Image (cartoon, rainbow, N blue to C red; front, side):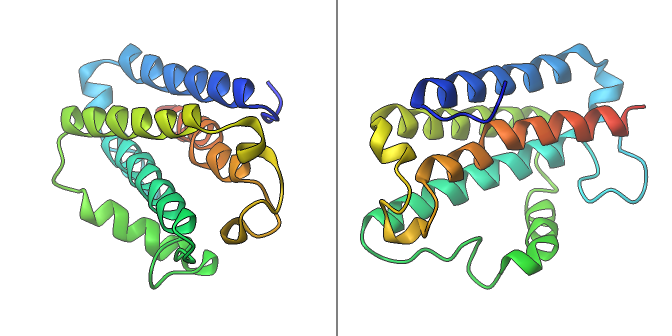
Length: 165
């Protein structure tokens, strides 16, 4: 499916890619689900990937909350820039390294539902009108949400498939 341009498409593709990711992980053996990826990958296993996605959900919700209060959120995160994204992602991996895979699944599902609930509350215009909010700059809120959901889940599926070859 092409990049979503409506609320319905955003909800549908985020749900579809979320389910594809969870079903793909579920199709792996227990050993495959818990085994580490080949050396040289930032996220070293499925737990790392799920907690990466979970944390980016939390960041998105935080940006939205701060931005809608009229303040400028630290995007991508306080102390980080888009150029220092590898350091932020490394910090995320380190933060959750003691989380079990089962707990990672639960946290990822929960933050997915929180983000989905946020999308459901917003109108088409609130999601896809460019320059509507000062904090989103020249883009739409929907573009941020696509990056935090459907596009990110697609990235995760590709990463896990590559690591499991």
